[in-house]
Length: 77
Image 1 (tube, rainbow, N blue to C red):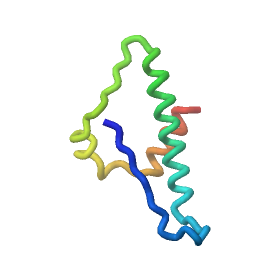
Image 2: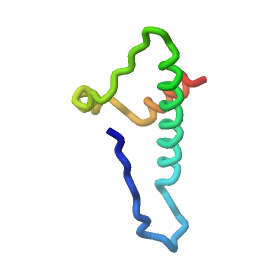
Image 3: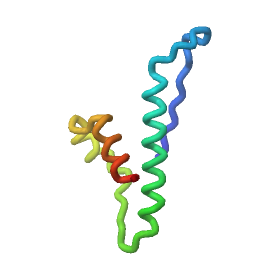
Image 4: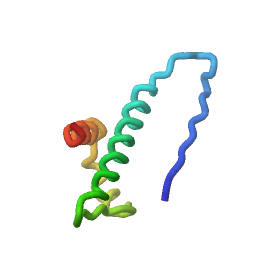
């Protein structure tokens, strides 16, 4: 399933957006993941495991945004 999230800006008049850089980082990681998934569809015998939420949540404490971002950037280069 796809999840869509919408943020409501409670400070419309204030142009200071402290979370903006984090949103941009996540957007970039999402773009890289889409690209990598598309590339994997072209590899014979490659299997992508999707929708295994329980396994992800079992190890969610070991995922750190900076480390995931770093690994994605290494793979993407």
